[in-house]
Every structure is written in structure tokens, then in C-alpha cells.
Length: 210
Image (cartoon, rainbow, N blue to C red; front, side, top):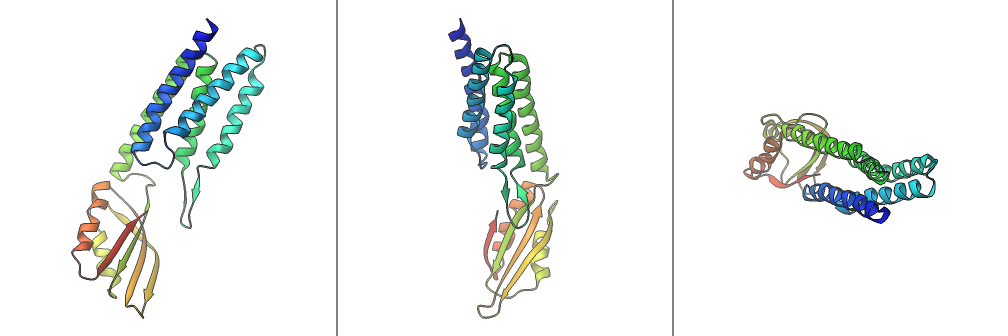
């Protein structure tokens, strides 16, 4: 009976974490299915062991699991010269450890509710991102093969919901080139229309979005 229960816990944790992780991987997020599977199944295993080994007081080991995962989540944060991002990934790792822990101690209903909540938040977050609502800034780098007025480039970016601001300007007089870095946000379809607008210009050289 104990073996069957443990196998059930592992199967639930593995399958649900794998589904979420694959969705993140398909969205080209920096943290894929492997991390979520390892974190959740590891938390499940340790919490199940804590309940068996320290049945009277498993809380110290359970608390250590969540604390340890917090350090792993901090490693998911990525800092650039413009901003820090990766908070969603870090929080996802932490909450998936909680999901695995709940399943590991046999609290199936709270565990499934946490899992459903994660999906609801991610679906709504994706909706906001597609609508250009919130802090979904991207770095856009535009290179020209000729010195052109900045206002001409700015006018090509001013489309639909797109908002932008210049982050840096680099002018190379020797090569007669210009490199402008913007921070840009807006609806995905509006941002995706910018490369075509730039490509039609004779002075356009290259375009990069990070």
C-alpha cells in the first residue's frame, strides 16, 4: 500500500510538471521542462521521505526544501544593463516545489489547486503580454548603413500600441553608420510589423530584438 501511494504521488507530480514544462519550452522560455520536473519530483520525494522518517514532526525538513529551492529560483534571475528579468521563472520554480511538496505529503487537493492556479496565472499573463499590457519591454537594436535623422527611425516605430524610448545612440563617422538601441513594448502584432517597415528603407542595415 505504501509503495502504491508513493508511485501515485510520483506519477501525478511527474506528469503535471512535464506538461507545464513542455509548454514553457515551446514558448522558448529560458527554463524548460527538465528544471520543473526535477524540482517538483525532488520536492515530492523529499517530502514523502520526511513524512515517513519524521512522521511526528516533518516540518523542519519540509521548510528546508522550500528554503533551498529559493536559492535555485534566485539563479533564474537574469540581469542586463537595462533591467532584471526572470522573476516569473524564479517564482514558477518555487511554486512547483510547493506543488511537489503538497503531493509528497498526500495533500492532493491543495496540490492540484496550486497547479490549476499556476496555469490560470500563466494564461492571463500571456494574454496581457499579447495585448502589450504591463512590463513586457524588449530591447531593440537598429543598425543603419547611412546616417539618417533619428526622427525618421522613430516614425517607423510609432505604430499602433507600440511605446518606445531611446536607450543608447552610437554614431560611426568613419563607416557612416548609426546604431540606436530602444526599449520597446506593445502588442506583439504591432512589434512584429516593424521589421517590414524598416526593410523597405534603403538606409536599413540590420535589426535585432532581445
